[in-house]
Amino acid sequence: MSVLTKTKETVIISGQTPLFGTVTTQGSKNSALPLLAALPLLPEVELTNVPDLTDIHVMVDVLKYLGATGTFSEGVVKLDLRNLMNRPISADFTDQLRASSLFMGSLLGKFGEGRVGMPGGCVIGSRPLDIHLNGFESLGAEVDSTGGNISVISNGLEGHFTLPLPSVGATQNLICASVFSPGEVKLHNIAIEPEIFELVEFLNGAGANITFENPKTLTIRGVKRLNPVQFNVQPDRIEAFTLLVAGVATKGSVKVTHCRPEHLTAPLQALEAMGAKVEVGENWVEASYVGPLKGIEVETGFYPAFPTDCQQQISILMALAETPSILSEKVFNSRFRHLDELRNMGAQVKITNDNSAIIQRSKNEKGMIGCTVDSYDLRGAASMIIAGMVSEGVTTVKTLRYLYRGYEEFIEKLNRLGAEISYR
Ligand code: UD1
Image (tube, rainbow, N blue to C red; front, side, top):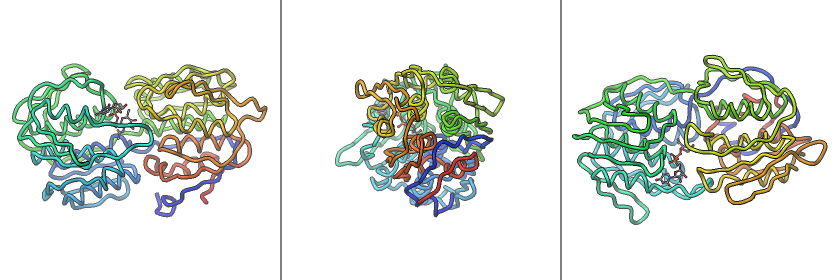
């Protein structure tokens, strides 16, 4: 991504151009972030297929602030971590990016103490860290979270902890904190998102001893040290789905390659249920518009349920469907702000309570009409761009800084598929 496009906050979209063609999936943001947060545990690393995103740059900046040396360029993070110091990760970092609070676990595991600023409020709802902190405490750490900072101290975690709900971040933080434990740590009711398996594979590849007792329970037996490792980040399942939705919404057909269709089961079922044609190969998916879309019921949940990170994108298809859909957001408590913008564009949207909405196509013959809309978060920004592509006339989408946190060359990819989007 060029520096120029990263700073462009607004795009103008000429709507109703169908997308056709093939596009490659980027490396996974949500895999790369926890891998980077785990790096204090390793002496040296080469990560490939790392997406060029602002959030990734923040994580690399944190590692350099801790003393790492090396580079992030052309999708490769190459770092020497032998001379890391245990410094507090201030709120300047954790406010920018919640994932930087995952350094708590790796610094605790490596140095016996992790200090991070309390992450600030988040646009998709309150995102507490209670499960992370209760987990550390239950496994024997001392936790102090007064004065806007969190400090966790332990000379080795040990024991069992059952997560009250399968938080992805808490599972990752607790795994990293336990890699060098003198005893054994068992985590129950863990998250089972593909990004968790990726972190375990990465750490085991470097010499950790982490085993699954069953899909929801894992045991970490401490090792003395980890070794240098090379690792290729898995494809981004959320970006893949976003591009597929863009194809169907614009009445086109998009084939996404270099992805893992097995990570997209629930979202692809939803696409099919709405009336799209979905074809799947070993590492590709093609989704095509073949006729009027039907309304469906979607409820987000923990993997393998329909992901909250795909909710805003599917809502665009719901806003084009002939019959009403019911959309329920069960993971976060404030992820519907984009629906007000869809309503402004003409879609029929009724928010029945904070986390549930009924959505249907515009009563207007022409469908949604382009106007100026704002983006409020990462997936919302991508979804507003798709909404602009399907609307009649011209749509201006503002506040694209959110988009660049998770999508690499998104506008460029869409334009190559036939969209007419220009930066302002
Ligand atoms: C990760 C993903 C994010 C995705 C989310 C859910 C990354 C970098 N981010 O975020 O894109 O939307 O998973 O799939 O991978 N919770 C608590 N207490 C805690 C922790 C979480 O109540 O201590 C709640 C949250 O408020 C939320 C739910 O648990 O309602 C899920 O959160 P969690 O799985 O932790 O999400 P993240 O790891 O922050």
